[in-house]
Image 1 (cartoon, helix red, strand yellow):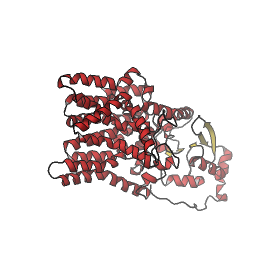
Image 2: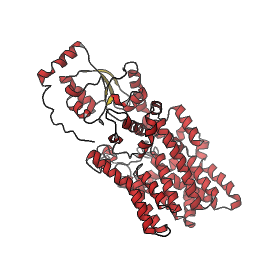
Image 3: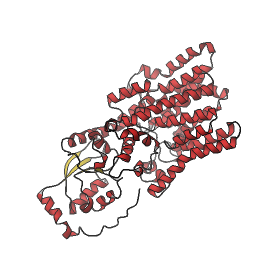
Image 4: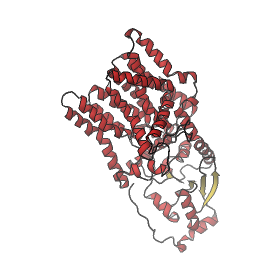
Amino acid sequence: MLSASAVWFCERQGWLLYYGDANAHLNIARRVLDSRTPGYDQIGTVWLPLPHVLMLPLVHIDAFWRTGLAGTIPSAVCYILAGTFLFLAAGRIIGDPWAAATTAALFALNPNVLYLQTTAMTEPVFFAAFMALLYFCVRGSAVGAGLAAMAGTLTRYEGWFAIPFAAAWILATANGRRIRAALVFGALASIGPLYWLAHNWWCCGSALAFYDGPNSPRAIQGGAAYPGLGDWRLAWLYFRTAAQACAGAPLAWLGVAGAGVLMWRRAYAAALLTLPPVFYVWSMHSSGGSPVFVPTLEPHSYYNTRYGLAALPLLALGAGTLVAAVSRRWRWHAAVAVAAIATAPWLLRPTPEAWITWKESQVNSSARREWTARAVEYLRPRYGAGEGIFTTFGDITGIYRELGIPLERTLTWDNWPLWPGAVARPELFLWERWAVAVAGDPVHTAILKAGLRGPRYKLETAIAVKGAPVIEIYRRDSSPEALASEAAIPARGRDAPMPGITIRQR
C-alpha cells in the first residue's frame, strides 16, 4: 500500500524521471530492444546490468517507457522485497517480532526511500539484494546468500565489496561443513563480478573499462578534487551528514544508541549492515570518482546525496533493537513511540522539500527539464514520422522519449559501425533528416564538417538555458542549391578512401 500510494502520487506530480540517471537507466533498457543496432551490446559497460534487465519486460511498451513506469514497477517490487527481507532478518537477529516490525517500518516509512522506489534508480534493487543477503546469512543458507550476493554484484559495486566479508561470516557461523559452505557462497557470489569483467573485455577490449574507461565515474570526475578525497575525516563527515539528512536526525540518534544495545546482545550479524557505509567512505577517500555533496557543507550543493541511504537499514535495525530492550508488556508501546519519534521530521514538515532525495533530483534536473520541454515543443509539430535523427545518447534521449520517437530512428554513438562512418565521412554516410546536438559535441563537429562537402544542415533553433549547454536542432537543407552542391561532391573527392577509420565491436 505504501509503495502503490507513493507511485500514484509521484506519477501524478511528474516526478518519476527527475533523476538524470533514472532517464539513462530507462533508455539503456529501451535501446537493447529499440535501437538502430539493438542487441546485447547495448547494455553498456559502466552501469551494472541487472536493473536494466528487470526493465526489459516492460520498457518495450511505449506508454511505460514514456512515463517511466517501466523503471518504477521493478523498483517498487524491490522495495517491497527489501522491507520483507529486512523484517525477516531483524526477527532472527533481535529475536522479537515487535522489534522486527519497527525495523521494517522505519525503513519503509522513510520518504527518501519511498521516493526512490518510484524511480528507475538502482538503489531499490540493491536494497532488495542486500537485505536478502543479510537474511540468508543469519539463516545460514550459503546458496541463498550466494544468489542474493550475485544479484547485488550485478546491481551496484558495493555488492562486490561485500563478498569477502559475507564469505568470512559464513565461514565463521555455518553449521557443519563451514569451508564447503563458504566455497559455495564464494562461487555463486563471484559469478557477477567475473561476468562483468568478461563483458567489459568483450565489448571494449578492457576488463576494467567500467572503472577507468571514458564513461567511468573517474573519467567524469577527471582530476577535480572534492572534499574527502585523501582525507578520512572529511570523507566520514560528508557521508555522515548525508546519512543524517536521508534518515532524519531522530532516527540517526536512535540508531546509534541501538547499535550499542546490539553489541551488548552480541548480535554481530548487524555488522554486515555496516558494509555499504564503509564502502562509500572508502570510495570517497580513495577512488577519485565518488564525491558526495550536501547542501549544508561546501560547496553547498546536491550530488550523490542519496548515498547516505546506505546507512538507513543499520540505523533502522539499531532503533528497532531499543524496542526489544524494554519489558515485553510495553514493547508495542515502545514500537509506536520509536516509530513516531523517528518519523517526526517528515510528519512535522510534510513537504517534498524536506525529502533530500527528491530535492537532489529536483534541483539537478531543473535545467535539463526546461531544455527538454523546449526541444519537444519545437520538434512536435515539425518532426515527420519515420525521419532519422543524428544525435548522441544520454540526457538528450529524453527528448525522443517524451515525443515517443522510437530509438531506432536515432543514430547515436552506440550504433557501431554506423556512427563512426557518419562522423568521419558525413558526405558519404550521414543521411538523417534531423540533427540534435549539444554545442561542441561530436554531432555538432560532424555537422560543421558536412558543411564543407555535404550534406548541408541548417540550424533551425538553439535552446539556451542557464546552467546547461546549448542545444542545437538542425534540419537537412533540401533546397535546390544545397542539392546541386551535394551532386557536385564527387569532383571534390567524395570517392576518396576513408582516412583513419578503425571499426571494432563495443
